[in-house]
Image (cartoon, rainbow, N blue to C red; front, side, top):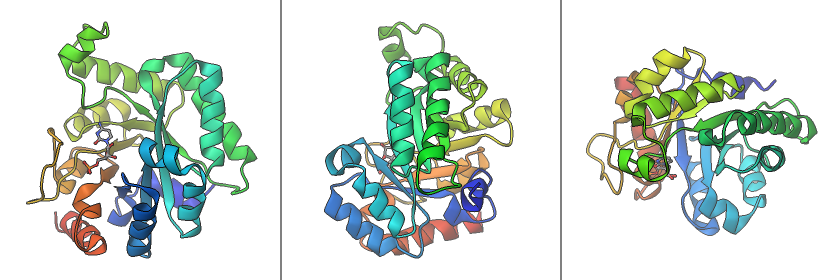
Length: 251
Ligand code: C5P
């Protein structure tokens, strides 16, 4: 099993292992950012917009530059389809991937089987990707949940889906920094908890609402942070990334 990816589940001793930079932009800009961040950043996140436009080759290009890649496609379909998709995403080179927890236990187990199958079949031997569940999207509130037939409290829904996912064999969840604390208590020390909605002190909030600083999110129990625009929209993305690492070290 890959040492670096193993360490990623417990990366507290190296903040560079904890920060995943979201490349929410077209291919050319993504490759330019990857060049600028080379040698400093360890993790990049490729979401739907970039992956669907650029295809799996974007992942191999980033990996050839030495990055680990979080492919965030939030899979959700019948178990057979999700098993195949998870295998494909892992074969494309994912070191971390996501599925929707609300797809249910059978779908989550199928995703875990697919990830395992993809790991065995891909050329890059020995890497075990981290498979994470999306619980409730932070864009949803209790009213939105009710509209889709979920009447229990949002926090209860988040915790139930997180347990369903880890019981199905997933490595952890993506959650808001506010949910990280209760999820850490619920899921234990080993679980991977990835939090977006991170803004360094003094940074623009953009369209995020429930935000935390990098240090707050880590103190709340996050193992990894997803940070996009505070780094990618900075005049000097590498300097912005390094300043975030400093802020984490100082906390
Ligand atoms: O630019 P910013 O730091 O806001 O980017 C956050 C990243 O995290 C984006 O890729 C966004 O899609 C992702 N994300 C999020 N909120 C969630 C789940 C994912 O902002 N609940």
